[in-house]
Image (cartoon, helix red, strand yellow):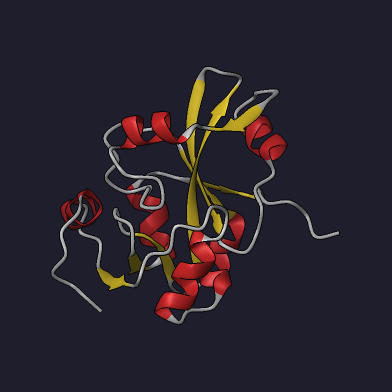
Length: 163
């Protein structure tokens, strides 16, 4: 555990009076599996570790979503949530320019540009949430209610239903 690391995420959480703990791990760049490596790296169950994904709806609205690392996002559900028809993942370059974070280090807290945030509704079942802390290899642990309130997020079912 490393509490003395400062990122835009830690500055944001501190400014909003949110209690958090920072965890660091050996970052592995493995597209599609970064979150799984993070969960293993900090020794926490996958259901409690969320990945942050930037989405563009109908080529006009950007949304930050966060889902458990072991699940896949349902883009149609995200689009419908915002009255849209289509949603797609935002390209890495655009996501980095918009948030100020590197891909693999994007956080819903402290991004350069404020956009709507949606957490998968499974966050409501957790006692602690683990999510990117604003840098590759950094995870911040906080109360799910604090995570939702400090970014005025919505919660919704935004993952692919189990078959």
